[in-house]
Length: 465
Image (cartoon, rainbow, N blue to C red):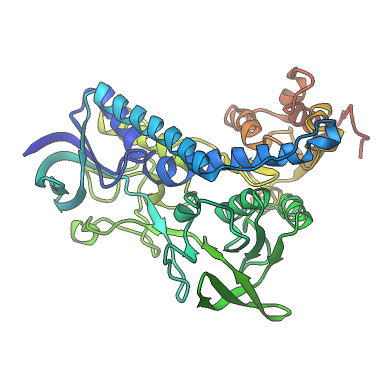
C-alpha cells in the first residue's frame, strides 16, 4: 500500500499544481490521474483550442492583407499538419507537467480512483488495483461536458468541444448550440477557417452574464462575417440524414430548420464526482453537485479538500491552480487562504473579451456610486496599425475616490491586457494611479491608461463628456 501525506485525485491545472506545491513543502504526495496529466484544459480545451485559434487568426490576417498592400494567393490549411502541430504542443506541455511532478518527488499514479474511507482509496490501474492510504485528501476531479436530451453526443454529427478540436476539416455548415465562451470561440475560429455558422442561445444575449455593451461588439463581428445568431431560442430536435443533420429550432419568430454537417453542443458542464462516495463521507455539495469548501479549500469534513472546477464557477484553469496552491499550503500548516479580490476572465473569440472585477451593473447592484469611462480602440494608434480597431476598454470606478472596481475589455489582445487591471484592483489602485503610470507608445495597453484618464476627469485623446 502506498502511504501519502496528501493524495490528490485529478492531475489537471488544479491537481498537478497542488501536487507540485505539496511536494515542494515536503509532503509525501501522490497524484492520481484517470487520463492524462494536465486535465481537460491542457489536453482537450485551453491549449489545443488556442493553438487552432492562432492558426485561424493567421489565415484571416493573410486574407485581409491586401488592404495593407500584401498580396498572397493559394492560401490553404493542411489540417493533417495542423492537428500534428497542435498535438506536439500538447504532448510537450504534458511531458513538462510530469517532469515537474517527478522532479519534486511527487508520485504519479494513472488510473480511476475510488474513495473507500476518510483515509484510504483504491486506484484501478492498467496493472490492477492499487491501495493508497492518506492523511489528507484533495478532490480535483473537475467537470465534464453536459449533454442535452435529444442532442446526445455521437462523436460524428453531434459533437462536443473535444471532438470539435480534432476535426480534419472545417464543416461547411456548423450549428453551435450554446452561445457561451466555448461556443463563441469555436464560432469565431471556424468562421475564419471557412464554415458557415449558426449559433443557438436560449438566453437573451450571447455570453450570458457579460456586460451587454461588450457582447454587442462580438455579435456584430460574427454577423458581419455571415453568422446567424438565434437568441431566446432552443433546439427542439434533430433529424440525422446520412452525413447531415436537420436541426429544428424554436425562435421568437417561429420555428426554423437549419441543415448542418456538424452540430457542436456547448451548454455547460457538470461536476465529475462519481466514485468519490461524497455522500458516504459526509462531504456537502450544493444543489448542482459542486463541492462546498471554505476559503482554505477544506470541505465540512476535516482533512478533505476540494479545488478547481469541482468547487463550481467560475470554471477557469488559473483559478484552479491558485486554489491548488492554497490547499497545499494549508495542508502543510501555512496560513494560506483564497483572499484574492478578483479572478480575471478571458474569452478568445473575435474580438477577444476579458474582464476583471465588477461590471457596471454589478457595481451599482453592490451599492457603489459608479463612474464609468470608455476608450475606443479605433482611436488608438497601435490598434489601427495592427488593423484591429474594433472594441474598447471600459473602466468602472467608485465616483468617490476613484477606486477601480472593474474593467471590461473587448478588442485586440484583451486576454493579455487584463492582467494589468487585475494587479491594479488587487493593489487597490485608483483611476488616477493608472492614469499617472506611463505606458509605452504605441501599444495596446495605452487604451487602459486613456480610459483611466477619462475616468479621472482629464482625458487627452478624447473629448471630455
